[in-house]
Length: 314
Image (cartoon, rainbow, N blue to C red):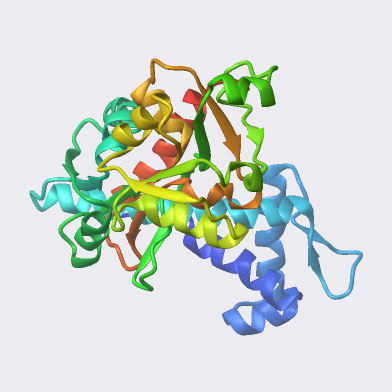
C-alpha cells in the first residue's frame, strides 16, 4: 500500500537536523549536496517558513523546523497505524479493542469516552470487561485485554500507562458539629477541598478498603508518606460502603472526586486535599509496551479529550 507521507523527504530533513550540516547529511544519504539543498528549499517554500537557521554554526533547526520534525513523526505514526488497520480489514480481520476496567470507573468514566470513540471508529468491536484492580492489569499483561482503565501506576516493566484525567486522592469526613466549628466557611465544593491538617484528624476513625483494593493501597502510601497514624482503623468492603459510613459519622475515608460524583452521597461531607501525594490516584489507561494494536493509542487520545471536556469547571 502506498503511504500518504513522503518518507524520503522526512528522512532527508531529519538526517540534516541530526548531522547539523547539509553536506554531511548528503554524504550519509548518498545523494548530492545540491539536490539535498534543493529539496530543503522546496519544502521551505511549500510551508512558507525556514526549517534551518543558516546563520548558525553548526546548522540548527528553527522553531518551525523543530515543529516540522514533531509533525512528521506524528504523521508517520498515524500512517503506520492506518496501514496496519487497513491491512487487517483487507485480510478480513475484525478491528477489536478489549478494555478491562474497575467497576466504578466503568460506571463513571467509560460512559464519557465510549460514545465519542464509537462515533469516530464505528467499525471497531469494542469489548468492556469489569474486574478487580489486580485482575485488570493481569488481563493486559497476559494479552486477554488491550487496555486496563485503573487509577494506580503499574509495577510491571512490561506495562506502560497513559494519563487520561487527573483524579486526586482526597479525605472525606462527615460535616458534623465538630467539623462545622473547625471549618464554618466550608461550602461543600468538591473542586476546592481544604488542605488537610492530618495531625488534627488522627483522632478520627479511618475507614479503609480491603488490602488488595486500589484505594487501600493508595491510602497506605499516603499514610506512610505523611506518617499519618489514626488511632482507630476499620475496613469496609467497597468505596460505596466507606463513603456511606463516613456520611453517617463513623469516620473519615480516602476517596477520589470521580467516585464521589458517581456515588452522589446524600449526607453533607467535607473534603480535604493531600498536597504532593494527591496525584497517586489519577485515571490511567495501561497497555503492554509491545502492543501491536493501533486502536490503543487512538482510544487513549479520544479518552483524554473526552474526559478533559467533561471535567467540571472550578
